Every structure is written in C-alpha cells, then in structure tokens.
Image (tube, rainbow, N blue to C red):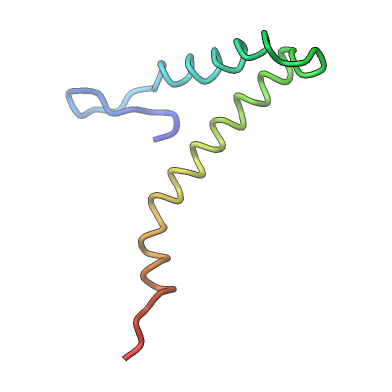
Length: 76
C-alpha cells in the first residue's frame, strides 16, 4: 500500500497524490534548508527515505500483532 491506494470502487490504483505530496514536500523544503542540503539530489534522497519510512510503517503495522503475540505469550 506504499505505492497504491484503494479507490471508492474497491480497486487499487497508483497513489498519485502520495507521489506528488512526498516529492513536493521535499522540493519545497529546499527553500528553508541550508545551501548544502537544498538541491535536487538531497530532495530525491529525502523523497526516497519518505517512501522507505512508509514501507517500514506498513510492515510494522502488518506484522507487529503477530510478533507481539508470540513474544509476549502468557505462561501458564
């Protein structure tokens, strides 16, 4: 679900708004960053890290309940 979103009809489609928002946010943030970080290369890396963070969050949400149940088993 990092790169796709569910539409109103239940089908999956590319999450265009997420692409634009993540990239746009990082390009816009160049306006207040120091000159050494305010370039396209750094914005691209921040955008990539934003998607990696989203993947990590999705993975944690998906698997944490199972991991917690196995780790925190109540002993009889």
